[in-house]
Length: 112
Image 1 (cartoon, rainbow, N blue to C red):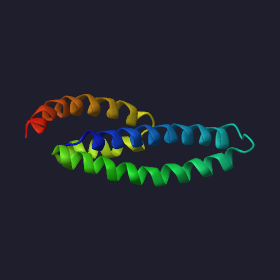
Image 2: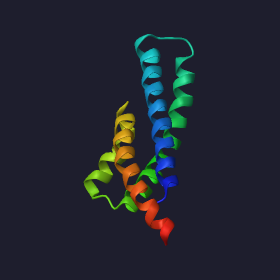
Image 3: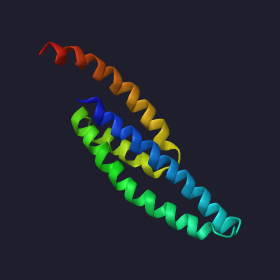
């Protein structure tokens, strides 16, 4: 597996995680605090998060299929983008696991 597959997953995990946190804060500002301009902010962030979450799903699925994960683990990673801050923790755990595997595969690929 190439490191670039993990890198693009990591980038999208952070981006969707940040956007989801901003969306939650926007919803609190819009509905809980009745802040002016919160509706427009929430609309923009919701659209951005929606489109980028679809891209996150594609990259996470690609990563899982190349890492040969079982279905349960794959679903766990895919759903991490729907729970605020979960994407950060799941991304860190997955990155630690796969960076070791990528480092082990690199010498084998260099010899071939």
